[in-house]
Length: 351
Image 1 (cartoon, one colour):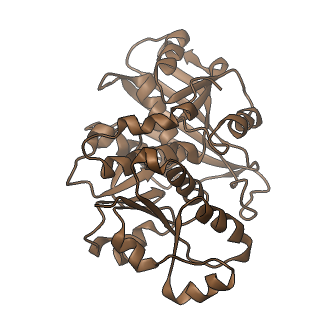
Image 2 (cartoon, rainbow, N blue to C red):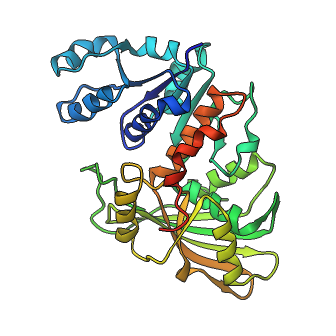
């Protein structure tokens, strides 16, 4: 059977994901990459044309076909047709749960579906390198690739507070200092720091709730709490972490644990613009695919057991890696790890 990956949406996750899949199509063992664009827009014509030039096939809803043709963009597929012939569907739109209810649940053809970020309840939560062993073939047809900050929280907890499969976490607290918007976006910029609400009485914000959900797939019930503040910057999310362990540890031991985790990049840089600039110059189209970037000078231990520090979140890079890994997990039941090697140059150990 042909292996077809269909991506819904061309936003800050969808666009680079389509490019990543089509550029490495042969290595990934993908026969065809298709993508759905909902709204014909002359400002976005260039990026759609480039994705098509690189080999991705455009799918649009039938009622919008003539509008796309008027822009000089010739669709290859209808929206419904693209879904029906896909092996894997990745929803990168803000309407994953709605689309699941309206379209995906009734489809028999695709082997798997994924939604991104804040689509809580779409399926089993997943983060590459954290809970891969929790995925069950024949059972997990719907996966929720968690947000970039949730990836960051999860890898910090696993690297610092876990020994093998055993948790030594007594309390985990995080402050997510989020960038206002993506550098590609003009709207929704925050003119000043804006604090978030604690809507969840147990977890604070969805970041800790979702990280808890990732570890819950492995049988853990972790004590996590997160807060969020929106900053007037477009560079990178920054995370402050405070992890209390059940035994004493030194800062040097913590740094060694972080260095041993292949999903963690260490750095001597302490500004978001320097880390962001490194990604621009050395990442995949500007993206670091590591789960987190930790400035080693900020790592400290308070009262012998509480590890504190700051780290940078590589925005959509960590979610892109998880999306690719889950896609290949669906496509290649006999094993896919070797196919991921092409992305290892963007998993930096040092930034």
